[in-house]
Image 1: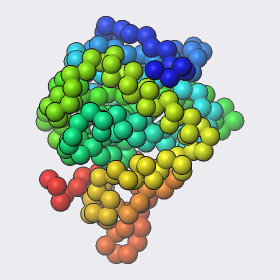
Image 2: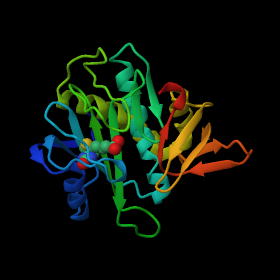
Image 3: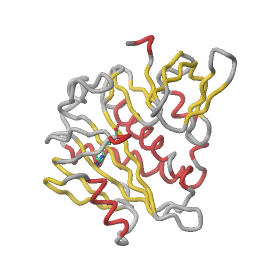
Amino acid sequence: MSPIFRAERIAEIDSTNEALKHRAIAGAEEGLVLRADVQTAGRGRRGRHWVSEAGNLYMSVLLRPAKPPAMAATLGFVVAIALGRLLRALVTVPVQHKWPNDVLVDGRKISGILLESGGIVGGKVDWLVLGIGVNLHHHPEGGLYPTTDLVAAGGPSLTPDQAMDLLLGEFGPLYEVWLRSGFGALRADWLAHCSGLGENVVARLEREEIVGRFEDIDPDGTLVLALADGSRRCLAAGDIFMPARS
Ligand code: BTN
């Protein structure tokens, strides 16, 4: 584990993100990590529930990078790169990034990343909580995407603590690069392992669905789609689906 991280382990909690958010507001230092065996109200992106039964990794990391919110949001890509590197060392099947912050193993979602930030002072976030869930031993079925877990994908049987330490070990040096040089310095790494680049994708937003060719991501993590009418559309958030693979 990188020296800036100090982990607290909890048997059961509603949500490690929720608990860490309160600790952040109460003044906890950067680097505090909460890991729970079970979450009773695990949160996913866009208000979804994150199934959190014992065996998998559920953790949240408190950071205070003092950057504007849009830049702080790119940390989700940095966690995905760290997790991608870790998983590539553990399995022989393909490991890819999927916009915005998912990691796919053999085309199936193995993890989720939920960023929450707040306390904006002088245009910079006071705290940022990186919530990370990784399916180690089991995975829920019937969600938006096909899913898998590390053991099902042919990887080793890790405890949540082992997975947390390995992941923080990958993330620590990347966080330092990001602090010094921003996501621009890591974007090529994310794109090198990206799923769906150059393909037609369907982006589902709150109120619309857009079909376009996945052209690029900007240095701020925005997805750039080329539409059939020749225009471009940039998306800051949403869910994307690859029709060619479903
Ligand atoms: C997603 O929807 O893909 C993001 C899921 C994030 C789940 C993790 S588990 C640890 C942390 N605590 C939460 O309540 N959510 C995140």
